[in-house]
Image (cartoon, rainbow, N blue to C red):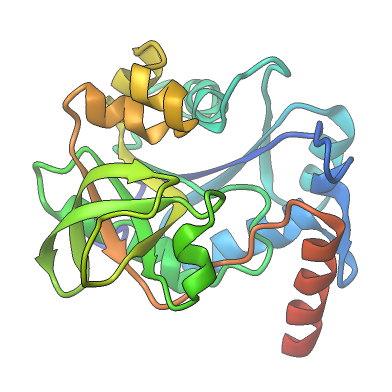
Length: 250
């Protein structure tokens, strides 16, 4: 998509210094580089557009800048990553040139370029406001684990769903695949502007899932089905796993 529309895609990577389970997470060393720099490298390798890191800490700002990546300072009091990327968008692209914004979480140091590119595909449909990713669940334990968010969607093709709901429950009921949601999003600019203007919704609060705010407001979310779940680093054990994965690739 970016080759057809150069400059229209902006990749924003929110990085929050405060983390209760893994203090200083963006600066955690993974194979000689801070985690946030590893994520920025993965995003650049996807080659879909300009990459900007949105941070809330001066040390992280300096680290990203010294590594040669574009970085923007944002407020420390944002309630969500989407709020942070919206502030970053206004600072990074005040002229409004970017039409599509990809939100790559700053704790995905092992993500491959493929999933980042895949997030753009549902936006080929002009009716889609927001695109995201999912993987069919293979582990039976994950089907009942409330920490594994499920997508309930209507099939559009073998590789795509239209999202009807997101839930921590085991759903939908009956025979058939269940899908593990991956929290990487591609927004049309207008959709992101609309989303951050909305108040938290009833179901969002109940499930603690921000994307339900968009669905409750009537926005369309389409979901691309990919093959594997990128490792999100939330704990010291996750960090060690990420180190093993990347060290094996060297």
